[in-house]
Figure (tube, rainbow, N blue to C red):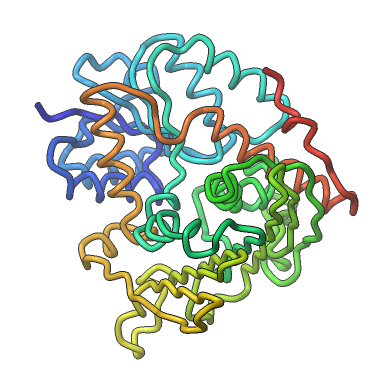
Length: 368
């Protein structure tokens, strides 16, 4: 039986969810809510004339819904999750970051303890085919990871409704908003928890001449973060949001006693220069130490998946797994605890960079 989803938030990510669900048999968006009428009508039309809810409560009350997707601005997620929990027990797919302020941690823990249905945090990067292939092979290719580097060389923050993503108070800060995906991948790849972080970052080139209601943006557009992990591995994140002229949007490489493995992912197809033809396919490179024989493999992606969003099919593959959970139950791939820990890594990195010091995690500073 086909499952009907409600969607909260009809902006860029909301539209990506709708387009990917349209490629998936067995699920569709039947109801949308957005406080901006124009966005709500756009989402409803894209979903095939979905019902437009008058409020979140109106959406939640729809008896035909089997699940809810939250794709609203970051600082609204926790309030909306609590509103759902107050009125309904239903599976939820919530976009990252799960929350934006350290004071929200206890609220997430209460949801985790008291909400009986699964809440899945949308860490799409796990499901990009090149990154999924990297995850499958990296331990054997390296002989056990000792050093891990994640690079994002990308375009500046996009223009969003109300310019909400220009201010730390809405996003949690760049290391929360943009980088919690990468912190989630660090934990997933290393199978360990961080011990400490040092960082340097700042607002270097983007948004310097912008002003909204008398307030200049305070988000950073580049930086470095270095983590020590409990298992002895070290991890580096390099973020530059002034590198949109580069071939590869994301690069991940891991090094161990047996060799190195690297994953390379181009940026979204819609940003690739039209005169250069199609953007390159993602790649994996295996570089064993003995024998020294680097091998490069292309990871081919279907055009329909590339055109459905900016994440190289990952939103589609995430929805495949989410739909299976909606049908048969079970735990989410990305739990509330996973989403919480990725945000705490981002918040601690913000502190490390702002205060120019090491920050220790003290068991992730996450109250049980």
